[in-house]
Image (tube, rainbow, N blue to C red):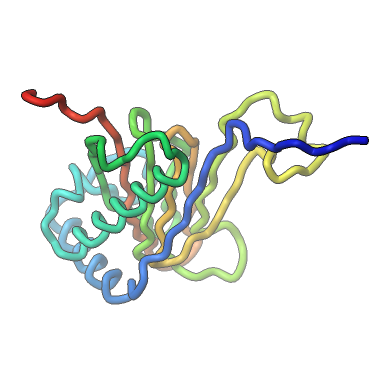
Length: 209
């Protein structure tokens, strides 16, 4: 007779999705800020291809709409951290948030990449052009584990080599920064605008430091 004792989710990678309530007015304000920022600076080249990536830490901008996204990002990071560990109170640690804005025009995309050195990475979706089918607007995550091809015959969800989702405007996605991800080309005639960020924890400063 076989008696099931316990099942553990070893080496799992959390993907958390949040919804910002009453986001429509916020998104309109963020799009205006996007126009202002692009008029002020041509941006930088990172993982973006045929798109715009803002320069510096966006969360240092004092615009109310940007600060609202910063507050939501902080809330999401704390909730996610509390979800994965009870051994550490994230409020006891120092936390750095670094953000930037992306604008993907028609044909624009983000190449596969990670965010080395950070703990959490996240994306807030300001605008996401609607599509009926295809992969436009999707973000895809690649399994960080190796030597898994033999699992494909079992079609087990936990061992699939990739996972892709199409978030909507007002949604915030959070994931570990080591996770390889990329964004499919924008196949619409409208821009896709997002705010991405990294969250990095540091040990608290000792007394007198």
